[in-house]
Length: 140
Ligand SMILES: [Cu+2]
Image (cartoon, rainbow, N blue to C red; front, side):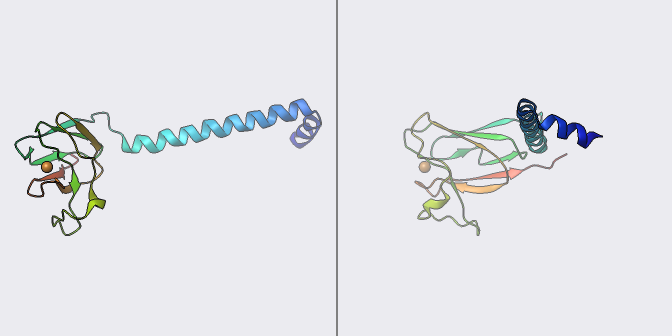
């Protein structure tokens, strides 16, 4: 019975066009619903933005505890440029490894924002003695 109706309706090109349109609409709705679902898993209602000042050739605070999904903003308060470079796997500072640079060189008053997905050690690629650490706090 149902198949017969579909068959009857699809013989009309206008109805066929409408069916294709409705199918497309359903696809878009289901795709966006899936998108919302996956982003909800990563988003928290209490997302915080933390600030790290780069001042006097030091990251302040040097160690920062955040939750996954929080944002960190580094602000350069020095006259000198600085950048944020991720320390390598051994947590050894390697100023020659530019692939680990997370931020561009920040001039005075410039900012760099990062959404935190994991904890890591970092340093300034221009002044490797400047080090800092992002620590993931307990979820509770
Ligand atoms: Cu620096």
